[in-house]
Length: 504
Image (cartoon, rainbow, N blue to C red; front, side, top):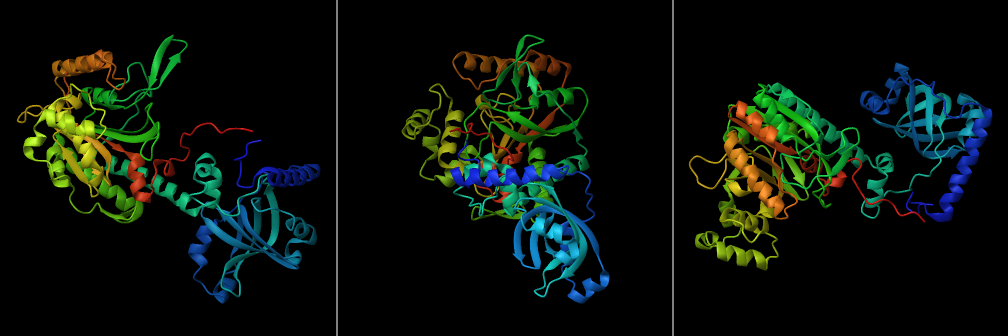
């Protein structure tokens, strides 16, 4: 028996389940215990929106007949009249049940039904003396017998692990959870709509790949039996999307699931959602403007406002996004460092070692500056801020700047202290790309499990000629965290990955 199955533990839970199974057994004796012939005509939320503001006389005059179905969340048995609160996907409504209206046999059965049972009912709308919109039932059926008890209260913090493991219970009990995932659905639909309106073509690229590419990450490995080859779960769709740009699709996007064999944290889940998009004949500056437009419009369409409250901070998508270099961000948020120190590789090595950084000893100046930025400035970027001019050595797919040696035309967007998007002018020089792949191969041979593989087919695609282009990837889950004021990525993923439950 799993001790964490429900908040009702041990022997008490066993007794409740046994009693409910006995009730189900008696139902089976009378015929089909899980009927599937009830057809509803209305939803609770729609009725509340349409009739909730009317007074008792107006509703009585309207004579609104309804057929509803939902889960019983509350029940009050009061002799010759009883009440039940029933929830469906749209909201809640109250049932008024009497033996005169539904029949003595049904009423007696209803008194023994349990919280969590799913009911189907027919009746007429009315308002109680207290002004609550209700349905006076003339027919009532038990559609689904619930065998497990719902928790009396679902305390978010205390039961957080249970909420993730048993999301179905979380969704039943917590309106906030349901609304968070409604916002997620609206946001993804809004992102898709904006992209289509802007002339982008939605495509699908492989999730099983022979060579994992498009990001620096450790992949999951699997084996294809028929081909007898190892394959990798996608870490990013980038290289396939840019193959499509080579092929003539000048604006493409994909809302995709990626998989990275990395640790768990409030910002990381091994399976996550991103949107990547590419536009030919544009550069990194256009892409920053476009990404700003995309996120602002998505926030407004999903939440109704460009201003969000996130973990006590006010995040304003309506204002132009700030733009800083890596060194500029350090100077702004850690002014104790001088320009001379930030240009001194020996100093940066010593400073980072004192902070416990795991940077490579052979790292160049740009990579060391980036490592220091991550230590002292990244968490302080609350308002939307683009960090630009990333060093070549940490940007193997980005186009090198023509005017600034050692840096690329790349940005990362930070909001609320975490990376939200990554974009750049695309590297379309096949010889430069081949050379950078070789550097990644050397890094992998030296033990870097996140370094990229050499993708010969992608180099071949570039040799046919890819137009100048810009691309970007947006972390959808992290963006949804902002829109829903969620502290952890697990709060915006319906079924986050966790260790298997211990069974006793």
